[in-house]
Image (cartoon, rainbow, N blue to C red):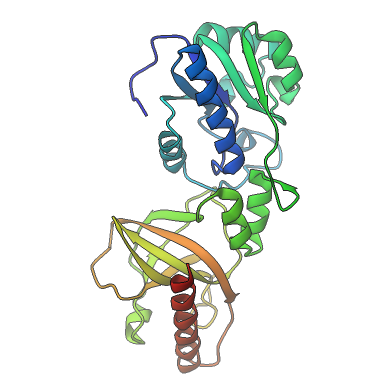
Length: 298
């Protein structure tokens, strides 16, 4: 994705794009097709901060970080990303938004949106309104369904929140992942022979169901099986801080301070409190065996 500002008219896909799931990818694929036919560069228009952060009820937990969202756009072959300021635009009528933002500011000549896209003050603008107000080519992309369910960021959040990682991954079209720096923990894992890398979920990021997951650690071109516990560590902690601890199999290196990517593959079991460290160790050994089996199968 180019860092410089666009200097020519654009074909633009517009939406929130949280997760950049298979429905979003269908929209971006259509954008590239339309842009190629018109000889235009491609761009994605989305808000820098999710609109829900400014609305009653609070921010909706996000599936990916802003940095990963930009990386997914680049992978999809998009030339530019335009980030809007919701606080500055929230009171624009649909007509004003189309005229001043899309046409005047962005020089948009082709707009692509999803079937459920809304815009303008209080989200009152619809795809039909966009067709009426925008004087150039407007393309509305239908929902993408999986197992009879429309794929959406909301459906993926619900799947992750209940631990249905396999279904979430199918809707994402890839493994849901965290790429976060490794922090210093209490080093308890080392005392029982199972060292872990410790990460913290950023504010506003979705939390998966507490429990143990078969995961995959990605270190450049190499991948390693891993086991990740998400939760409050009830056997060894009395606090409520949510941690993400990963034991990487067949790997030994100092990762402190590095951004580490952990991909979630399968939910193994709920988090639970054990009577002793020996019982905890035995459970982790069983989790490791299960994670190895999942990794070999995949």
